[in-house]
Image (cartoon, rainbow, N blue to C red; front, top):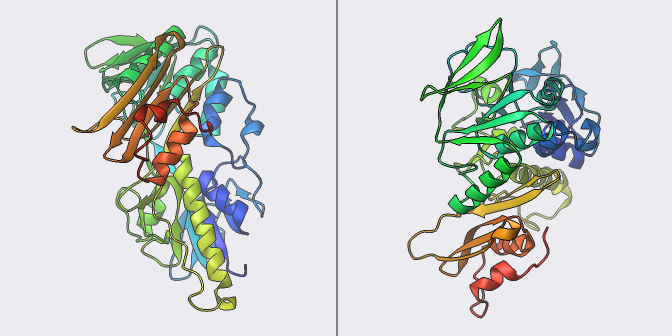
Length: 408
């Protein structure tokens, strides 16, 4: 391709695009692109950092390069080292930043000693260096990231407390029963779980964290605090360039921003009012953009109207998590796990195997489900949900949960 394509961000979305097309990839981190989904496994010691490296891009990545300004008129990207990179097409894959909660003792740019987010490989390596058997660690946030971090810290022998402001763990993905089973699993691993509790502040001594204060006055001793309070799209570069930004950088079905020469994909992008923040949609967006750019480059050689322009119409994404170790637990969730009045619900529970399956059917459509412990049916369920097609009349609902159909 003769078009100069510059990609800002070496995460999942940016790296995938760089595997498909010859681009100039600017990666802010010093590490080659890696699979962020597997960070908890690196923290737990199951994988070495090099194991989670993503396939190499077609062109070398410029590592440790931070983009600081976009000049849309000149079509250049200014980097923190003073260099300018020209583009014909610019792709923002800037990802997301960890949310830092408004806590007493957590003010300013520098975090107290012992307090760390859990978002990058450097975060992971820093925590590994700090945690040893017997260290008291508090994880703030009981979503997918917090559960993964707590499980990994427990595997290192830390005394782990997991705090969640909501009523249950992973409340965005799991229903009440599945969340209860997950909590039982975490507690069986030695993780102390507190739900419906709000962290109000941190105690420090000589610049280092010593405890976490809860709003009810309870105090949790802590030598290490992990902030797993969610993420928000990283949009400052786009906003300062005058691009349309809502929650994320606003894109259309061609993954274009309000500037037709600039695209956005991955965690930073907002399509049809939705920011996904998951690896699956990031990969789909990168592939859709690659197809679009390839089609455009081939346009002069094609007869007009021979093929439609590739478009991205959204992702129906399944969340999957494996809590490994001596007693592993697999879980998967998709769509709407909480039924509406009139929905059909089928549940199968096997308490002896910590297995739970549930699907929600609305009319003739599968609209959501949760599987925990036994994921044999996840392949068939995911295909039925992602296809959004009418379920056959002759298939009983129980068949959805008992047909294995492949687990991937």
